[in-house]
Length: 356
Length: 256
Ligand SMILES: Nc1ncnc2c1ncn2[C@@H]1O[C@H](COP(=O)(O)OP(=O)(O)OP(=O)(O)O)[C@@H](O)[C@H]1O
Ligand SMILES: [Mg+2]
Image (cartoon, rainbow over all chains, first blue to last red; front, side, top):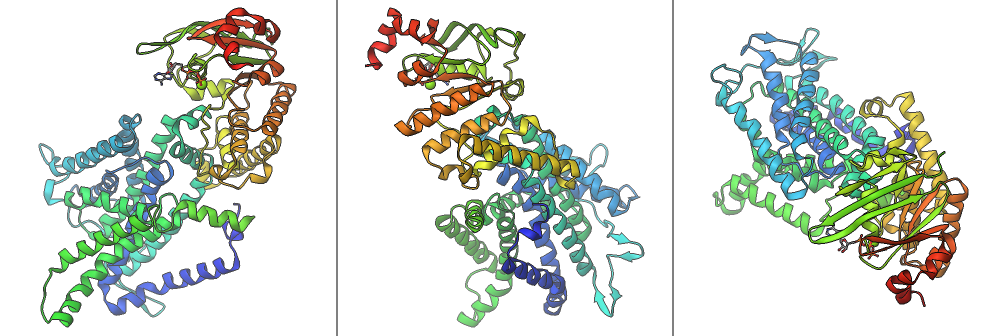
């Protein structure tokens, strides 16, 4: 475990190298298709970050959380409030992101505390409620003091700025044009690497084992000496921290935040990513998030032309068809791979078979 | 060390209409193997659950090494030095055998999230020590070769051994085993007996619930008998075996 690269086979190393290479040139390839795709990719990476955060709560610790998007919202609003004309505060992003992470982490612990005795369905319902409460707060905290600007949200949020490179416009480095979204892409990539490393380290740590032990058998975990209350709170809090960081970057990339970005559907979407990919397994979760982020977009761009080509006119509204195919794919996956596309257990079996 | 390791005084526990334990008092001496027997539903497991903080008790107190033991939460009981296994094996099924044991080290180690994230020198050293200790314990209970198998893929007997290894990982002074021989074949039972004797020789005190009368009588220094939540006898095996109340309540039916 000292050096994660050492434990990989040659084939895996080659695969990793290929992925790294592709990721590095990806935005320029996408930019030739259309800048929109760079933006879509950035949002996909944000969802990967969210899924990895939720994976700590749901995948590792086994606590069903249906209000996770609330922490994304907290991070986004912290960024919005501290870097916009709303209060006239303009802190740099490297100050705000840690603040957002800390506030979200605190919110995670506060919202987690009352749920400690709940399991399964009950936990899901209460966390769902909390998620909604946060959104409703943001919708209404404009009176008597205008804190969140209500449903209108916060506009003209500052872009990232590193030195004199602003992420709003285009810069030229090494003869290449780096548009705003492309700069964000590379920033997100760095954050993603860090988050993956943190996730892996947590997983193979004393705390990570305690999370999984609670997921596997809470009574046995208690009897084995784990303070399940503290360790569960830690899971909520750590997961929320990831959500807070993702939220801050979301606010900057988007330039505005409003409560409607943080509806229940988004929580469910992130949960679907975790479950589809395979709870607990970091790579499975990433795969799930990438798949579910891109599929709707790909469908959005293909459904209409395909119908025109086939029938000469639009029979089914693309939005309807998109949701239909999306739901169908989810049902099929759950029918044939109930533990997810790349589940922890399978991953485990492969790992142990390699070793012995 | 005092003459008495664990003393339970007037433990009571009621589930609705069922008086599962009624004024149960018992004393366990250091380094003895103490047997707890009784018919089904006598309250043996319930007593374990009270001792280990899993069930709140209605009355009574427990002293460990002469000091009152807080039974408020299981993890403080584990920290105080009481470890247990379960009648119906409770392992972390999707973790490997060695990880199961490593979880048992939790209470004796202290690395937190920041240590883990930063992968500090102290954290790595502690992690390595946890792994080493877990390997030793797997070896001790005789399943070192299954270290990297998922717990649920182990045979029944190996799962029982793994549970003991996990309990031992908490560095207990008292190990409570709830029917460890249940479902084991004759060979496995002989090996289990050797394991328990070895534990005692290594300085541990063992509290043993067991239905296998031959095993209990052969292995234990003293035996207590529960019936309908009450202790009806507590003495060396020879005396308990001859006790008419015990014969009527328990031995008469199950010991041939
Ligand atoms: N969680 C519970 N809720 C309600 N009643 C319980 C609970 N646990 C135990 N009981 C009841 O308490 C009594 C004692 O049960 P316990 O499991 O302690 O018996 P035991 O001596 O371990 O029996 P066995 O030899 O079958 O394991 C039984 O009548 C049982 O039904
Ligand atoms: Mg029992």
